[in-house]
Length: 589
Image (cartoon, rainbow, N blue to C red; front, side, top):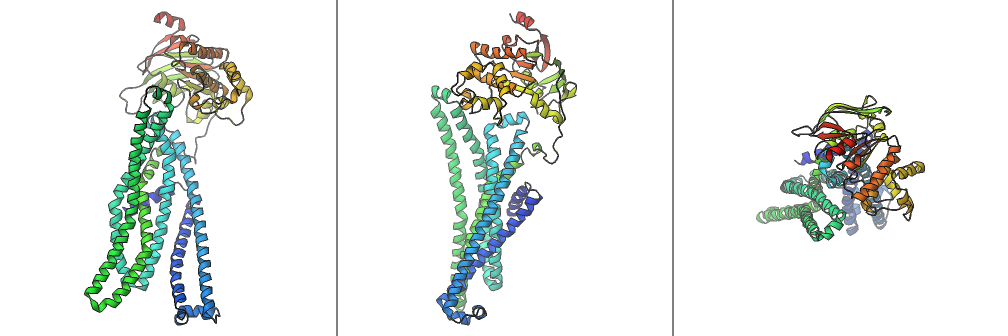
């Protein structure tokens, strides 16, 4: 399972790299190995220097130190010791600077890859079919696009680098021991290897479960907080703030309990390996007590075992911690694979073709059903709308009105039939031109916590003031803007909290007009408004009669459709009747 974990994490990480980045990743691993080897030799080099400092005569009795001493032409042991100490200091300085530089390069590299993953996650989730997007909800979407990639890079991937680095250190130390003292090598392998494996095996499932549960709880916390602050007024009046606080605290208690378990799981390997090493020393001592003839060599082996274990334990601990952390965040590897079929193919993007709208839009025998639905939402819908016409749609909830508009917006794709614009079918090949000419105003208009201008232009850096004035005029916002202290630069608050319901809807209409919309969809744009406010919005809609806009209107209130050239009634996904406004009013009355 160990190799499977490392292999899957490595495979997931490399899948996000291009050829150049893969070569760079290999270079990073090589440099990490070099850094690890330098680290081992750095510690090993202290031993002869300390021994030489404590017994200066050793310099001349030890053949290696004597060789260096004579080769460099030293005549005084004291100066040679100073040379060794300064040399060790310089070596450690170089080694540490080199290690810091490697860590900096590694962090920069993984950060760049992390940004790439976030970019791909953003593209993937914004290309999901609309029903997937709606089913997931904003809290899970934020978690998948922001938190999951961050944890994959900052925890999973960086611990993968740590894993290989520590494996290299352990390999170098153990290899040195094998050549120096084979018996010690056998003891270390016999005592530390099983304990390391058993420690990981006993904790891996718990570790993965804790990570998965924590990931599932985070979106819930975000959702509760979002609902609390978005619904502050209603919750305050209903005396529900404490109820939502209790829900949040309960959720956070579970999160904190899982975080505590994570800390405990990460602490167990160090203590376990430490106890095993002590147990190994105890066993060797006991062996020496019962076999006195070997007591001298046993003491030497104990010393060597203790020294080797002391050096190996931190690396083994870091190795296990890295594996526990990768296991805890292994859900990120799985989550990043979700919906991969909706990732954009940047190597071969869809070539866009021009699309013009000068004559008509035709719905040709459209049928649509949601995945796993038992019946069709739309069935054989056909109608033609001429450029500049205004058509309305009525029907009970669930009759297919909004679904039909979502197909026109290309959020849903019909399973049968097609939509033709001047005889050309709407496809992915002309989607960009289609989006340039279509606008959408729904019941709950999307508003940013920004200025009126930013909400109309959606943050355009270079605002076309002529288009902005045109949009304000035909959306009946001129007087409202004049009354604001900063005009179009006035901030409207979160979700337009400083605007009335009618003003919000007119900002939505102005947004559609600013982008030179040729086709405008009004989906229940006035249904949530009172009579007076509806009149304000209807005035803005009436102003559009003087334009060549083609308008599709969905409404429950028949009076909203007074300026429509004709009105279609839908029931069970089918057009059952075509009305004029006068005939419909007579029928309703």
